[in-house]
Length: 460
Length: 106
Image (cartoon, rainbow over all chains, first blue to last red; front, side):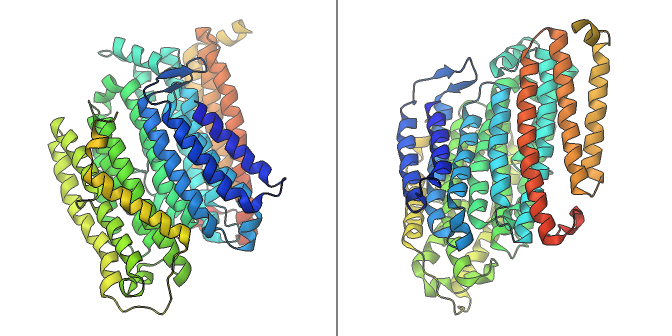
């Protein structure tokens, strides 16, 4: 809980910095502040507590995911320094920083909620900040389009979530997730139809938020149109926050009622994995490629959520961490290349292997980690999720997922092939110091997690 | 206050708010004008508010009514952001028809 309060204070500080003329020092101060919050967050480890009359709970689950979220935001803020360089951006830098930190507040609420009100407020804090950020390039129609599409889809899904919450409140008379869990256990064999409808509406809304098929169609457009840095944020922090909240919701409130929703979740998981991987094959735009790859990763994470037993939360955490570090490295390199070449298509990467071997090697490792090839973190994330699902009796889904991840290797290789065997273009690509730092840290972490996955598997 | 509210059977509130919610959903899916879509989303949220108030009144539990305040605050914030986005779109394309907003496909 203290983590949440300090993060909110940091966001307010960002807004006030404009008054005190701190624009120049804002990003270093913010980064330092987040680093302090990261270490304070670690103190809640093994100290489960309930705050605000049962609104928020600190648990190891929330501490681990909060740590990951703060780390992602730290990386994004470091990248922001050299991303917002135009004069229009520099005027608004304190607004951008403050809104980004408020996004983190929303994510922190989604990890530690113990009441439906907090789940709703967390999702909305996260989403409303992102609507603004996605549309923040005011003079580009593409960015406008991305922001507005995201806004429409997001608030549409939120309304479904609320209707579900209202129906469940009508049946159980409480918003507390533990109270709903008690009701669900007591009435497991004869649930009120209103409860089941409410549960289905909430599941649909969450599938929307995690961009699972058939509710995935907004994701590629929004990812392509939004500024690249915000795309990086959406495909890591937002996805992970939505999945952690979804996991907590299902495992605390609905675990015995899931029989009624199993067919929906299974079909959605299979469709997400297949559509994500197959459509990614046809993409030329690198951001869209990563968007579809993100959709297929959402499918793999759904597999962890469906099998919901024993140590699936550790598997989900390991997978999210591996996915986040690989994506952040890929985006850091991609932003550098986009800036140098002025195009977002894969052809912009042509011949990068000759021009800047370091960058090309980094991007290759990030792609291999996303594709799930050892010794990178992505492989072990996939391995644990698949083996958990296998043990809980989802052989068919696991079989489908393995076939699709083999298809997936093909489009990740497309980028690597472009870098090493295509004719180089004339643009010179040179990352700034902060980008080099981020890329090295992310790749090293990815390899480290890949070599010592045992640190994570028994964590939660 | 309670008597007037409860003079109507609870199921009717459920039906009315479900009906309102469905009108909102249909509006979002079928209308092409961005402002009308925004209004339809508000309608969906207000259907939820009605449902929560009726449930909490019948159960004698004020929690639902407190939740309604949260929804109102969030809906206001959401509309503020939505209208701001709409204004910046209007400045660029001079229209509120969302069919024009299809620059990105596949």
